[in-house]
Image 1 (spheres, rainbow, N blue to C red):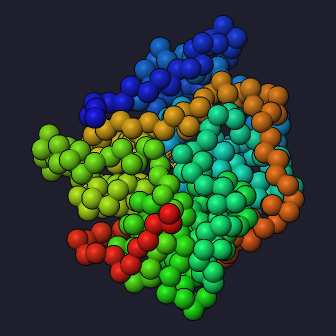
Image 2: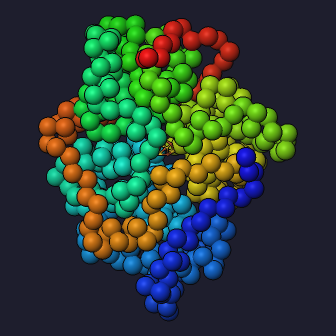
Image 3: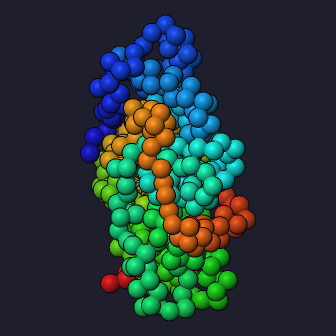
Length: 372
Ligand code: SF4
């Protein structure tokens, strides 16, 4: 594991620097934006980014488009062209409110599908068709139908990191910021003591460690978060005494147990903003540290680097081409949208609660089962 500043190549647009060039007009349009990111993006990279940033910001007005960016986007996208930023839940809520006709989802495919489910009348675009997700790829709607046959009478709680056909087979969605609330709500509503929670085994284990509801889980995992180990945290603490460790609940149980705080990306951002630790490490996808560091210049960030290869398919060049050609539109069958919407709405209609904080002790979960 690397602890130095991440070496993310945020300069893919350099490849096409001959297509869009830095000139006095672009400089005037983007100088103020560079101020915010100059500690993260070296100027020689910025020269390649700026023409794309200026063009995208102009084009989104011409095309009545809005850009929604996940917390894992690189600093150039997150800080210089996004209209709304946040975790999956925040972006899903925002998608419903925006007045623009075109939504450009800077995140991965399941997020764009969620926007389409919530806004079927709008044009939802994803800048790269390669932006998948290991969790979403781990399960299909047909798998969910089989699980329901195996455990009749139990509700299916589905993490939003799934495809539309999986959501269509589910009873309610959840995110990492509300998973516990959703599990306990649906168990009470159905009058049951067990729920099926798919597809992230680690998130399910982290929820199971704190609830008395039995969790029946699927063996899916996020390829970014499952790579962290508790010994990584020991090494970080040894190398950076006094560091505060914040982890994402898609990490394995022992990583969560070894951390000082575990919550969704939104909860981690709030923690840094409100508590202002002197030194912090975010055990999650590494672009997020850059984005949170920009908002918190007085906090020192240690950056272990685990990149999500899917999120990194979204580059300025890909967004520029997506907007220019209005390409990579998300199209879903109306019947699937209708069924999936029920499970997304069931989550969105729950009362707003503070984001879940995961406190995993050594206690053995009440009951936990993996679907075999
Ligand atoms: S970080 Fe993990 S959960 Fe998020 S898109 Fe990448 S693989 Fe999927």
